[in-house]
Length: 592
Image 1: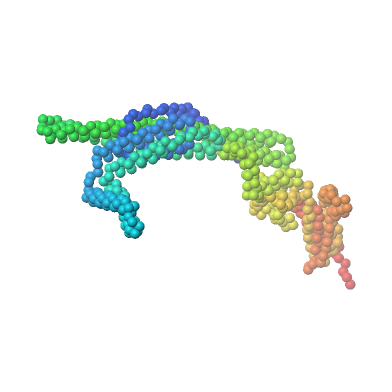
Image 2: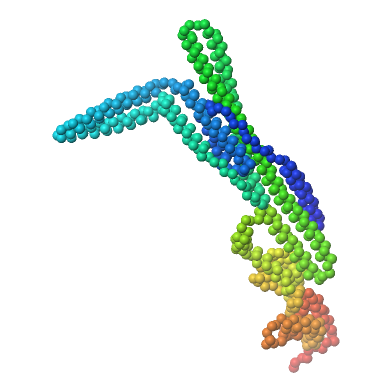
């Protein structure tokens, strides 16, 4: 037992040193202070890509501390700038590269023009019929009204045809103005969403307990992973914009070479050079926009990198607090081991009766274990906010779920009382007799013995009972003041021998051997009887004889202590054998 405690103490000390080192490492590293990103200048770039803004909005909606707020504002602002530059670049590209006129587009344009001409004709026809209806005679108004109704119906059909052809033209890419309007509408909606996004600063609630620390660390880790993905996407976008810039710059250099080679040509060539120069100017603006977008994405990546550093610092703080909890658990374990050994030695020096000493040692050990477990549970789960409500609900639930254990726990206190049982006692519990070898907080273990009237030898079986028997059932303890039991022996006197001298001798032997025991038992039983009208208790030995085949059977019944039963029985048997072997005893008188 002591070697196990020493090994456990050594393991706790090693873990204590490891936790102390972890506390030192997590406390000496300081978090990086957040720095605001440098605002980007300009507002131009390529196609409408809202992924940066969507990601930033998703991140800033997460719980944000006051330390993270400047970084969240910078990330949202830079992502909004990226969306504006992407919209401007898309508008510029739409103007520079109008969609090609395909046969499908030409067919749709022809259908649209035909529908518009039909619409114009029916509008003019409706105007004529309306004027004619106003100037017509009453007899002609019905006919003109019918024709006007037909013209209005055809006008509605023409409107539907024009709208359908116009939508088909937009889908086919043949309506630059419609495409532009759709882009403007999409950008307006995205800007509205960006302006409505608000950063809510969350004040972290200081919670204790290793469970809460683990939950906080997992939440920070999930947020860190999301920001790392956003940072990687921003870096990839910056690299892509830089490559596009380099490609446009190479094209511009090649165009400059071609323009120098064509110097000194005619009027038509000069017009071509002017067009080429304008295209180079547009490419220059596109390169400048790509530079701005690449720089904006790099700034966004730097903001995300700083944000990750802040979150890593918060994670280290959470780990530091968690290690403090682990340190507290280890210290509680070491203190518990120290007090257990110290109190073991202190109790061992006391001069007390063995049963009381064992009771005191068990009570102290159980109290230490229960106290240590409760404190460790508070360290692991933390102190609940509504402690009273928590205790009420927990108590109700545990009472229902652990009824047997609770009854067994309180039964242990009854067994520790004056009329209880101790280790080494001979007891009978629920019809099973044996010696108590273990008396725990929730259960009692017996080493089973045979029936009291048959054998007192152990059967080798260990029987475990929940301590609830002390409350819900009953038990007999033959090792305390109520240790008296009635024992009996049977002796057979062979035929031809006079049994009465043997009966008298055995009675005298039993009375002499059990006189003190009978007197003490009588006093205890009288003291246990609270009824004033209760009669006396018969404690004298009883001897009965009866004839059997082959002789006379003598039955002797007497009171004895449970521990002395075998010794007294052996003594009586020895006396009976001597009497049966004594030939001087007279034979029974024969009947004529």
